[in-house]
Image 1 (cartoon, helix red, strand yellow):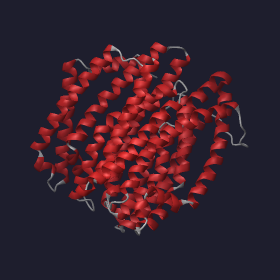
Image 2 (tube, rainbow, N blue to C red):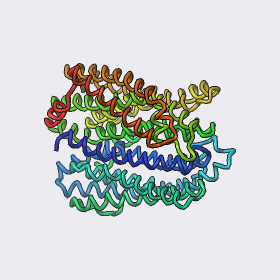
Image 3 (cartoon, rainbow, N blue to C red):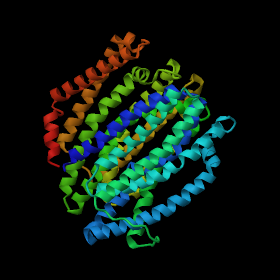
Length: 521
């Protein structure tokens, strides 16, 4: 299977999940709005969801996949199954203990995540919701483990499909709540129970897929082994690097909790920029690591460099237009998607301001996903952790400083989003410079030329998108949802068309050329 088809498989299912996620968030906005109850749910979901992003989106597998691949190569499929079973035994023991401890310490965890809730009635509600959501953490860790096994076997479909199941369950829960016309607090409780159920459904779906693949896992007494020690040696820095990235998000939540509604506005903005990040960044991060690991294991350094260059081209081609649109027309996007029910125009304007700030950082977030596998494939997880630590310091200091600077204008959450984007760029630049200095990455002439072409196309998109938005201003801000949706469709179509035309005219890349290049992989 070519690299492009792996990207397409992961990206396609991730796109389906994100689109369903939009449907879910539209229902959340209608049912919960952007007030204290919504803040309570978002903080409650934030804690276990951090582990979903930490484990399910690559940090755990950055160490697990290379070692499992080596175990299968050295000891055959049965040796790989024994190693995986050993990891599962230790993982279950850890998850059982950690989840029990987290349930007991929930009030402390909530206070740490949202100290601004301490003097509000929201605190008790958040603790209650968090305790129901907490087992989702364990379920996502198991999902990540099973996904690593599937990815090692070059099977990406079901692991990428798992998040779709989450959104299907949550949409069903929200639809039930809206149909019953229950109060926002009861709707939030229904949604929280849905999170718990969705975690179980995802873990079971991946487990059945692994069994159908012929992998035989057994649970026994956890015992140490050289490979497990190696997994910890590589995995702890890898997970720490991913964890530091998530600390950036947590830092934003902590600061935002001191302003009513700020957590919710950041959440809705985060959901929008996560769509392109998920489709492009996560797809590349998941599919690129096994490919680079195989090439480097065979000594194919030239092939690894070619793969890195083409992956970077692919990321820029899909990320730059998305970032350009989020920067120049965020309000039109937010109004069309979220403004209904309990979610009003003021909420849309505040969310849009944060979304624009996130747009500046979107290319950096994707580049991190492109550059990190180059370190992981060489079994270097320490360097990315150091760079992530640097970005964490910048993000925490920036979130506090920028939020306080913009608070008098009623935009503290925008400062938090800006700090996150700045930290992302620092992390991406550090990763890039590190690879170049070590000789592990060289941009070829094709990449340099195409990158300039993509940048020119993105600038053209910003101009055209602004003009279209101004021309359809009355449509976007009409009370008719369908009219606004039609305007957004025209905006997206026109922007995509101009980007494609400039790419073709500049010689950056045509569709046939892209497909032909990736079939090589």
